[in-house]
Image 1 (tube, helix red, strand yellow):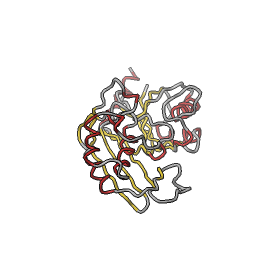
Image 2 (spheres, helix red, strand yellow; image 1 turned 90 degrees about the vertical axis):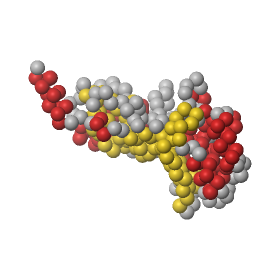
Image 3 (cartoon, helix red, strand yellow; image 1 turned 135 degrees about the vertical axis):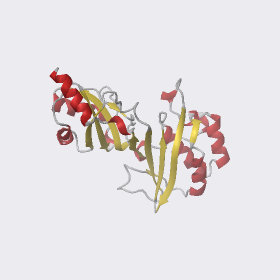
Image 4 (tube, helix red, strand yellow; image 1 turned 60 degrees about the horizontal axis):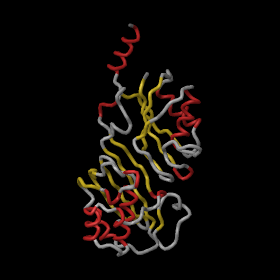
Length: 264
């Protein structure tokens, strides 16, 4: 057996999220079908993040174990041959046996796109949330700055987090406007379910004057989901990148050791 790591990107518009669901089309389902067609094995993949229905990815990472003898370099082209056009494998690499796409991650990066203009856009309609209202971006930036650090993010957690720890560490955030497009970038050690979308929805309350910056801080500290804003739509959210330790990859020394074990 060997462990492989794939880096993927996909347009999530046509899918019911990443994770397998009965009788529904998912990213995981399409990938595992492609892996079966390539290797003849029924494989289960693990993902760095289980993106929701309609959420996109530029740097999703999955891992799986296989007995396939195909060279790693062939996995990219072969899988893309079997995958639909809106799902693409960008890279493939052999990693250490203890690597896990989710548990081995040290940081995850998300981006949310807001199209802030009076009229919608036919080009951004599937990739950014259209907000026609005038936004107080300065107040939104100030409020977003208070998300950095270790906090209990229960106020921004989805129902799936009930009964689980909602304490996370946000390592970095950035809220910027370029013309009509506003981007909200956020990185953390991990995220609770729907955290980014709920934070964006609450920041939009700040931007439209429904919530002051001090009130936003109170929402975060109060840990009450009912006090926060509604979740921003999923189509504006992008899973951008995952960080891992540098020593996850199989080296030539590992390969030589494995060859020796095979000979024995």
